[in-house]
Length: 228
Image (cartoon, rainbow, N blue to C red; front, side):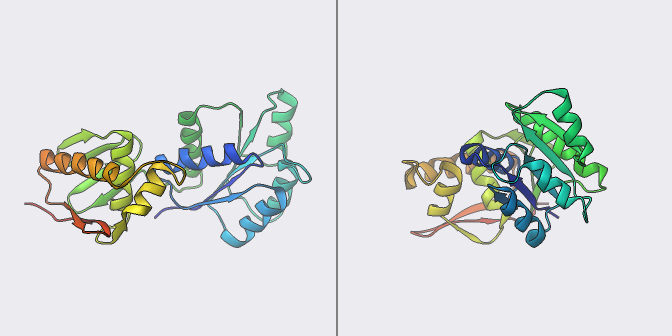
């Protein structure tokens, strides 16, 4: 089961970077907010399993948001701020934060702290995807079949994760380009075709029964089988 994460920051660039970090780690059920009121509305409507909350926001800051949330909820909250003074950290923890990180932060450490917070709640966010005889490790980017595994490059990983997230469903080329390269990129169909070719070679190397099928002028579909 995948759990919803609410990301809150008034800096749009940083918010997009946070989304990218979590998506690359396999967390696709993300909700974003760029102000205190938006954060509270998203929290009430979406009921996230974890919140990453910026402190310094105009109008209603993160401390106020957290104080309101803590009236009725114990959802894990990790606070982010550019302020690294000890009194600020104490204030965040006193308001009910479960953890506190200062900007700039290391993506690996952020994800490790998120995993630690969810484990404390008795829940662990999905760290791998399985389809047929394949298992994709979302932390190490390794693809495994039985005792054999291979490490994927970043783009290979992103493409395969999309296909494995919806096995048997057709993923349009346009969706792959938008989610892997970005809406503003100059990537074209042939970029996708190159990485599909790479992935097919990896499946062959692993001896997997899975196949990435091409639906001409539409997209790709992962047919996941089990080879005995």
